[in-house]
Image (cartoon, rainbow, N blue to C red; front, top):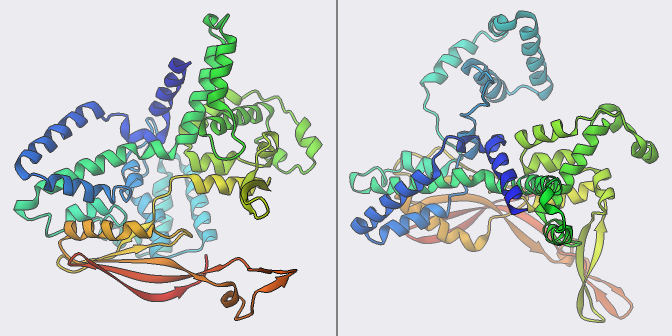
Length: 455
């Protein structure tokens, strides 16, 4: 069972496109070289090597994983030209700031040009584009001369722009930081595909083991071991169980043609249950899913109401029973959108922090784009100390913090209401505000910038 499970993991690693940057990467050789480098530096620089490692690990989730991944393309797939990438990724979005409807029209215009002109379609497309936007070619040529600044890869930005790190006596620190950065990028897809990866392995260890003649006489042992791995908990999340059931669900839907637009338009529950177009493309489709999806797209696309209902899934919550003074769990929701949101909340999602234009010798400015979750306050000070050392100067971090309002304040000064002999307090509300942390000379200070409404 373990053999087949690992075999499926290997297949996933070698074919899922989120692991594309690892396919030609010699991890064993690189790890050995990194070990020798760090050992040599420890003998020369002492404990400063470990300081740099810890400072770098404090921000190793702020690496440009997708920037690295975008450099690779599936074998046999033609890469888009630089002109095309600039037109759709920069010119339309950042320069012209066109509406989504206009952006979609431009995509359709490009596709139509390819359909009519084949290999010459792109040239025809840009011939019309120059008539529409005469300034495009000049801006495109100018973009080649501009140095690309990594706005989201903090480790790389520090290595490239820190005066402190680029001093001759400190350049060895950059090699240590690069070890941490490359290791983080290598393992990024592991945490972004955990549900898919474990589900795929569980799906195949069951399929292959049940077809193995050597199972005869060991069915009970297999059933016991398999149930321990793939059983669905009533409260909590088991990625093995969820991923396995999603792949089985997807395979069945593709076999029956339920991924079609006609099926999605049906509202009658009985008609949806009996629908079967008999396409028989389930196996082919799950291999495509295995290749192109990560956990977020996997859940967002396929966790729908039929799947939630069929597997009796629900969102659980707990409340305090004041009479017995115990916590009790209850079913909060059986809706697919609520269950899907619970899964989203459990996924890996590093903070979205970008780097503002900072000149050498000036404070480094970081901007946390608030997405509903604040930074962990207890880690801010130590993390910013490390960044200050690596930058060689003060560091500013703008972020959002919650301010808890009492029920009376939230109600505009109205008192709590009475129910029998007990005073019932309303749920406290949160008010979000933008604050700036400054780390200077190892001292952390904070000032409020402006209030921010709840997202």
